[in-house]
Length: 102
Image (cartoon, rainbow, N blue to C red; front, side, top):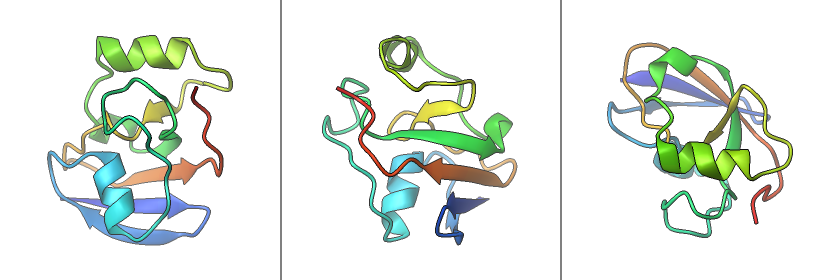
């Protein structure tokens, strides 16, 4: 279990090991656009992981390819539908407030 802090609201929730960031964010009653049902094909669930990146699964090929095709991506970028909680450390994510994918 990891403590997930969601910015800019500051809301905190427990995220179970194996849960995606998207599922945890939605379970916290936060709004995050997600158009492709978790297939890493749209990029609309793009978030910035401000803290705890080591507490998330590694970036797989599909996620990396989608991020490479997007504008506004940085070293803290993840697709919430692909990043799974490892349960090893607290995580802080920033919701960007706009669908940044295609």
